[in-house]
Image (cartoon, protein in one colour):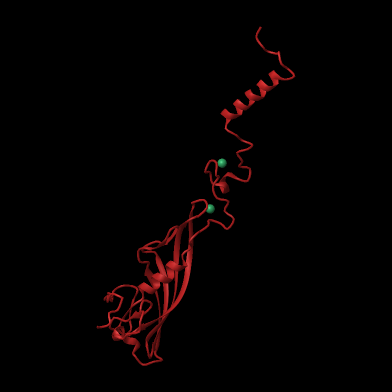
Length: 204
Ligand SMILES: [Zn+2]
Ligand SMILES: [Zn+2]
């Protein structure tokens, strides 16, 4: 039975900003080339409360090295992050820095049986598509619970106001709903009437 790679064979576009042409690198182990690009962020770099906005400028620096097994890529990327505070839902702007290293094997190595190949990357001819590895690294680095500030007090459980805006004095015990306050005063009045001052103010 022929070995079938679990990875679909894709043909990256040489025009994609995350595709690198390794032809000029040569195949001689030891040859290397480094490059810095500003690339537009691909879509769908996101987790529940944070994302890298599609098209945002991402600074990408790569070092491509020819090794006997293929091309070794050492990459660093810096991307802006737009998120929502996990406690108070205010917009949060931050950034993420990632560094990753991946080996890209030649196309024909795809057909060599090595068991699970889910973590392997392959060249497509001379083209190296960095997007899947870039995507994995960035999504892993996105904050799962971004905070507008480390000590964000969140939202008031009673009224939903943002406590950082409401200030430390925000408290529902000392400022109850006025309608209930009036009812409580009535209760107190009734007790007084039934107690020491009973008889006062009664009709008759
Ligand atoms: Zn917050
Ligand atoms: Zn409140």
